[in-house]
Length: 492
Figure (cartoon, rainbow, N blue to C red):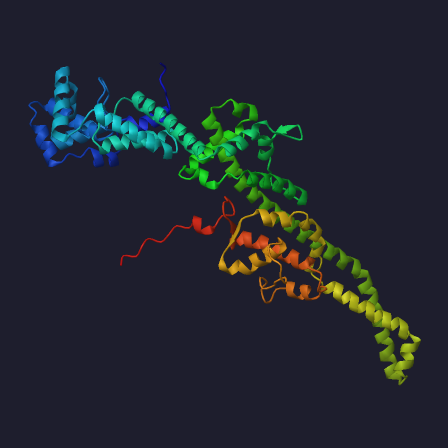
């Protein structure tokens, strides 16, 4: 059987090579008084040196010395200084194989070291399978096994044995996780998941591939496409609890596998593995698509604001000529009035002659209109985006599982009013007291709620950005408390 190699040369060296750095030597190769007492009971200097070396190698890295292994000079020098003998004395050690075996037996008897065999090895293999579920990589699991052997004073087997044990444990853990997820799915759920691989959308692609095509949109059509997928996934009814007690990195790995496969490839996989991949994809995609919907809404709000700002700027630019003409007319009228006042001529006569009372009334009306145009801000034009919001917003607000901090409860109530979940007057308590929205909302007709809905959706975007509201199951828009590190408990 070919060797199952799961570690690179560098990783194997980090776990099994003898140390050469001073910090590791000080920590693991410093001999205690009782160690030196046992070592000095050996008759010859080279035997004392070899006995000490085997003891230190048992402690770190935790294995047997290999026949003919080259011992680093840093180790021989470090041990020789503690034992008061020359580093060269090690060269005469273990000319007799029996000497090395005798020392091994003495070390096991004195210090309690045991070989990797029997019941102890079986217990470690069982423990290794449990650890494999949470191990993030091959190296992580191998490192855990090495540390466990050191803690239990079990002499490490060869590197090939360690790699084979870890590989077998990883495979067993993977199958346990697959079975755990599959067992939480009842028969209707399993049938629905399998149908994703056979059902075609528009007779072109499988439902599974169609669900996977969920990029963030740029407009209301993109939001609607995302909502189609989100509503379909929600209708499947696969609970998020299906993935409970499954490590996050295992979930991520199953999702990546699902996103690499096409429907034909998944159908060829074993039942539990296939169902586990499909269940993970459904749950994870549901959260990812909800995030994409929020991101799409964010972009639509931004586009609506830019369009309103551009329209406002266009109207101001268009009014500049009229402003100049109006100012010129008022300048001429003022000059005439000042001249008439100096000559003692009746002002009424002057106005009647130039420009006349009718034109003056039109000039004043034009001036008032231009004043309003120049003073207007972009909020006066955002209502133009109401139609694009209505194409997807009610579906979005119904599909998203929105949670809120206490400060955002008024906004959530307004959101529910847009979604049709409650029937009452349109609240404005989510707006700040000095918000410009108040002035524009008061100017709207009483039965026109378009600007109010736009205001709610604008503030919804801002609340997602600030973290005042969040989605229950989300990677990007989750509760910020999940990312906070808790304070340690007080000493008292």
